[in-house]
Image (tube, rainbow, N blue to C red; front, side, top):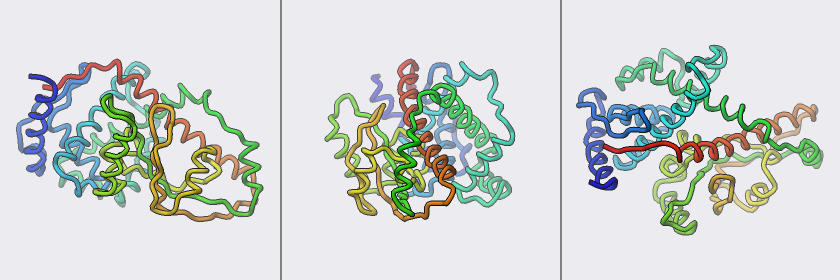
Length: 311
């Protein structure tokens, strides 16, 4: 049986499992994929879908087929990261203070008041808090690895940032969402973007990011938050200046793929009196964007060395 037929059969199985997703453990657990020596089971994918549903409420608007695709891709991506991280970290323990900060950020993203409410929600979904902890630890260590590998390659022109700040008393900020994608071997850029545009029209930008974006921001619908215009490179600044709220950009070439941006909202903020502090804020935003691009490039690189099998 070829890979496509195998994947089709797995999809049928998962659709049946998703239909009876509550309680999660009421069906037979089957091995569906093997990523090197790491296995992904039917329960893993259903649990992944439940987890992603915590931080993106739009998930419940999607078909069972799309849910399976999202859960599968997310679970595989995490396994690839985990396999790579074992080369650099003997254990997956992280600094408690930093973990608590990331955990609180997760609660905010999921719109969950506190750990007690989270425990209650997890109990309803038959999920364990350990699942959340392991995912956050992988996220923390992955980010640490990217910083260790690429911090020396970050390029920030603080003189240019200062000059842009001094041009006026206010600066524009955009509330942005992104989709980062690669080309399929059998599709041109125009063909791939046409598919993405059609999906955006049918299901909205957030749901399309969940399905097609290879960036880690896909988990929360591609949301980037408020971004100061001075932290963006000139190419992206010029593109965004021509768009209105609600517009979606054409594909922008970036290292490792293509970027599509949507302006969710925009505003002007006053430039604080402490120019040096403002420069550091913008420099940090700029560094984070570059690190995200390096993370995508690095993931694409290590993914090529991974053995993948569907059962």
